Amino acid sequence: MSVLITGGMGFIGLHTVKSFVDAGERVVATYRETWRPQPFLADALASGQLVYEQADIGVPGVLVGLARKHGVDGLVHLAIHGRALPDPGEDLRINMDKLAVLLDAARHAGVRRITTASSSAIYFDAPAGPFLEDQPISLSTRLQPAAFKRAWEILSHNYADNYAASGDFELVTLRISGVYGPLYRSLFNLPSRLVHAAVKGEAPDISPQRGGVPFAGDTADLTYVGDVAEGIRTVHTARVLAHRLYNLGTGAVTTNAQILAAVQAAVPDFEAPLQEGTGPRYRADAFMDTARLTGELGWRPRRNSSEGIAAYADWLRAGNPF
Amino acid sequence: MSVLITGGMGFIGLHTARAFVDAGEDCVITYYQTWREPSFIKDEYGKHVIVEKADVSDPNVVKQLAAKHKVDSILHLAVPGVAALSAVEDYHVNMDGLIGVLEASRELGVRRLSIASSVAVYASLGDGPLREDALLPVTSGNPTETFKKAWEVLGTHYADRTKLDVAFLRIAGIWGPLYHSMMNLPSRLAHAAVKNAEPDFSPGKGGVPFAEDAQDLCYVKDTAQGIRIVHQAPTLEHRVYNIGQGAPTSVGQLVAAVKKVKPSAKLEVNPGKGPRNKKNNYMDISRAAALGYKPAFTPEAAIADYIAWLEAGNEK
Image (cartoon, rainbow over all chains, first blue to last red; front, side, top):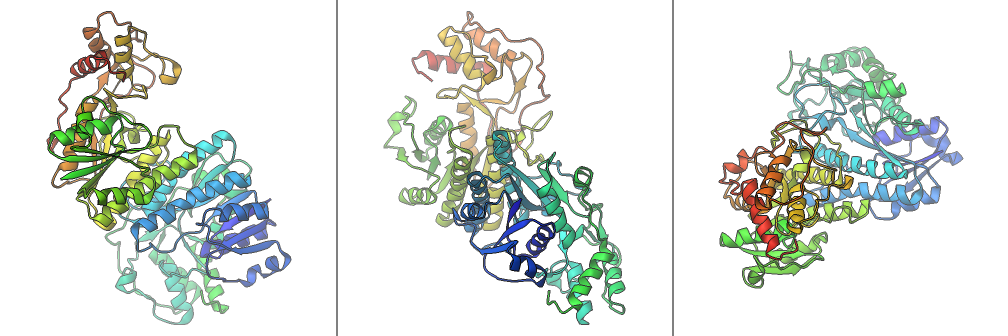
């Protein structure tokens, strides 16, 4: 068994590479620009179990060439453009054409399964949770990630049908929750900002650009990155899958008050302001139902928010910048 | 004023071009492979209707044509033929075509881009009426449903982001002169009656229909008016408009309409409801109606009109 992981130098990508390596798989990982070697991958790199390839997989032929060169039988697609490109047509083309690139690579390189990352942003305009894989959605959205993920999913289901029917390969999609933990760089979500501030002994960034002072009762579905990585590997390596779409998250909400308490447990004396109650964008039960993944494949996150945040604080205290 | 109609030499495209010309607006229509010159419009070719051969999946082609003819709006009706292409080719033609018309419209600053969507987006829903704001699953039953949903998601998002005026038209089951795939029932019934033959009720076409099954079927001349009315409206409150009959037409109604014109027609259908019968299986057209759209043809009048067209010697 061997797998090609796109976006293998990204936040989730690095952890996913590690999860496959730890499970004894041969891994080829791509990255586009930044070489960000991690000590926890050094042994696998030295032994050749893990190979990194610098590649722009958006260029036709590149991905299929790599898949053939390394004889991989699976693709895990995690590469995304981190930000919306300024040109709206280019943004659309670059994001959507990756689907055709993946399908071509799978078809011409004999790949058996493609696992692709979608996101809980799909559900952002549902009035309340829990969110189920099969629930209908609106076709109209202003939010760029939601629009692209929705279109991507709509299209990939069509190809999943097409190619599954021909027995060529299967395509499975994971809707991933909010993710926090080591190597997260944008520091957009709250646990990351609080843990970074706590470990550095600084005041947390709760500026208006980051959403202002958080409400104690507001919630998010947040999963520790190591658990997400194991979830991705669990789905990708499952012998048989009963579905083509899985929610991947904690199956519960974490309140901002819980996050702060967990950070304070890891770093005593840390303080951050919270507002009472819930904010204007609060939604009840705003988490993804993960019964499908848990029931079928037995995956569940190993760390609750306290354990995840403690592990994250340990990582930063060891001197890692992110 | 003039409009570029991609796929304008197609079945719906030619009727739509006629509707625009009748309303005083010139058209540039594109075709890819198939040349058509039906009697109702061929005299306008080279006058109020300019014809261009074009592959609209080439991102620059639409922009070049729109600029060359100085059109002030674009109507995107072109689609690859059903099952004509491999899955990946289908992806490129559909998606590159969409991006091409979006980019051309934005860069040239056209007044409006209207894009054909389809009643197929509602396929997964149960009983109707079918409304534009219905939530829909990401899964689809066929490529048309897939691509129209993906087009709407990306096209409306693009409109939000760029302020381009984009309208999606969810078009019902359309039948009438020039219809060629013969998938929908009224076309098969009318053709069979004119040829005094039995209609094609083979399993590939859905088998023998049930008299009480109904769907939103719209005569192409009405559809063309609906498309024109939404496209020409000075301002639009919505991004998505249903264009159809706004009422269910049953199999029994169609059979009766054909027999009224051709009493000897051999049309035997099943009585009652079929296993996939849906209640109120029609599109709510109140959004388009508020702009002045109102289908003029009853199913009976439309069948009579269509049969007269076929009997005048028109092959399709």
